[in-house]
Image (cartoon, rainbow over all chains, first blue to last red; front, side):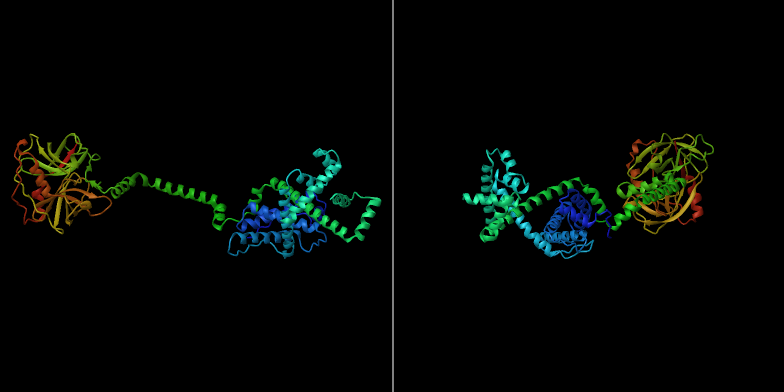
Length: 188
Length: 363
């Protein structure tokens, strides 16, 4: 019954390197190589393509966090890692959907990924908190914070973009915004 | 407050690597010497890390969505889709072969049926039967009209288009036959066993009982001797031996049988069911019992069923005769009351009956 997926998967080490370098091409190859596998898993287990998309993207986020978190050791194939993560995630969703415990029909080897998922859940929580805080922050604070801390733009650019008369004003504004964000973030 | 703002800007600059020279060494020195300062730096650093992780995740998600949009999901889905159940797979695999096999079978069957003439001969009978089943009012009886078109009659003028049998009601030229025999006729002739044809006129019809009374009007007709048979008023019992004489061909044919049921087709109380060999041309023939009483008049047999002929009961013949207004008749129609056939052998009965039974020819 098992249908072999034939796609030339890139070498695992290349991918890890690509992830560390934030290579878009690596992401693209990773995505196209392994999405079919996850789609198959989810479709075969009462899901649709949107579910597959969600689960797969989450698993890639887990992988990125793991690789970028440093001291990443490749102790299994990337494929197996992604498959295992997706399997756990999908199983969790299925169990949330219905009270009855379900089991899943497997296509591939699996490895234990509980630790990674625990870390991921923690990060996920923080991500959601940050998202909420940023949304509550409002404009122009949100954009200033994002430009400075995420896009890594210089104070000078921000100053011009928002029409502040000098960089000090912009810095003061940024400071106030950051203080508010911290407050919002930590109170939730 | 002011000091805090400057401090944060300093830490931001440090984290961004914008500090250099003495500023950097001062900063690092202060971190080592002042733990509370160091704590602030670490706190801020963690928060900024959190923020940048948020940023990279948002970016990653949007990048992935772009990639996802570019994929042909349907194609991938088809490739990995759960395999269809076995039956459907088999059907997909063999449907063309199945179609070809079915076509060949269809051609073979219809070809065979066509070449054996199946369609041309039996469909009408099937339709009859079918109609009977659906609509029981319609009686699926074969009218026993003989088509004598194929065999030219000897002697008198044209051969008739249809033929049946009739028999004398009285000695002065009244003849009874089935309505369906003379139905739609232009002119009707009767021919006796001697081969003489006489023109007749229609006196009375009763389509409900399938009866018709004719009168021989031909000047060449001579009065018959008085009738040897009588008409039985009471119904005959099942099992009674009966016989009939008719013209399924150009000669009188004797048929022998018995009354097999009190009612006719589909419970028709007007008729008996008779087990007797009859054929097209027997319609209108008399049905007589052993004593020589007319108990009925043959009018049909059931399609696709052997040995089930039907005969209108003689009491209806008498009713029809009574229904004819006597005033309108040229000559009186008197039904014979004396039976001279009783006790005779079948051979003698046949001989005596011969002159009273006519072939009815319809043009």
